[in-house]
Length: 349
Image: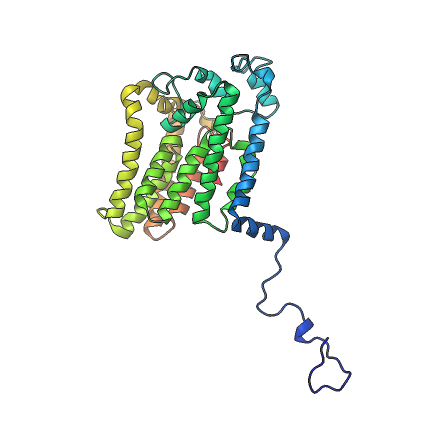
C-alpha cells in the first residue's frame, strides 16, 4: 500500500501502480524449462558436458562384456546364429553397434589397408577412420578409439552449430538420440563436416565451405545435398564466373577428387563396392512394396528427390533459404530411402 500526496491522513489507496501486477514492459516470467534452455544456450561448456555424458553413456551401454571377447581380442562368433555370439547378445540387450560387427566381418583385426586390401561399404574417409581405429589392440580398444573420435566429431558439430544458431544449437547436445544412435555407426563424421560447411557458408568463406562439404561427402555422402543450394545462392548473388562461385565449386570438386583418386586408381573394384553394394540392396524402408523391384524403387526414389531438388533450387533462386531447401530435400531422401537406418534421425536433428 502507499499513501498518495493530498489524500486525507490515514487513508491508503488500494490498487495503485505499486501493487497492480507486473509493470508495463516487464518481461513475462519464464518457466524453469525455458530458463534452463536459455542457460544452456549461453554456456557452451555446459551444453558440451551434456553431450559428453550422453555419448559416454552410449559407450558404456554398448561396451561388450569380457565373455564375448577371445584372448586375442576378437569377438566370439559374430554371426547372427551363434547363441553365445555378439549378435544374439547385442540384439537381446539392445546394444548393437556396427563398430563391433564390422570389425569382425571386415577383418579389421588384421589391419588391412581399406579398399586396397579390404572391401568397405562406406565412402573413403569412413573407411580410413575405421582402419585407424582398428590399429588399437583388440575389438574393445577399437571401439573405445572409435567412440572417442566420434565424440570429438560431435563436439566440433556442436561448436559449428553454436556459430550459426546461437540460441538453439544446444538442442543437438541434449537430444536423447545421441545416447541411442551416436555410436551405432559413423554418421557423426559426416554430420560434423556438414555443420562446419554450414558455418563456413554463413561466414562467407566459400573455399573452406567447399572443402568441408567435400570431406563430408567423402565420409558419408549426405552432405552433397547442401551443395546445389549453396551454389544456387552464389550464382544468384554473384553470377557463374564470380570469384566466390568459382572458389566454392573448385573446392568441392578438388576435395572429392584428391581424397578419392588414390583409392579409385589403385583399388577400383573395392572402391566402387560402396556404389555396387547400395545399388543391389532391396527395400526395407517406407517403400517395402517395391523390395523385389530394386530398379523401379531406385527410379521412384531418384525421381522424387530430383523433384524436391528442383523445387528447392527454385525457392533459393527466389530468395529462399538454402539451408531450408537442403533440409526439406534431405527429409525426402531419408524418408524414402530404400534402406532406412535409425541413426539417420541424427541428420534430421
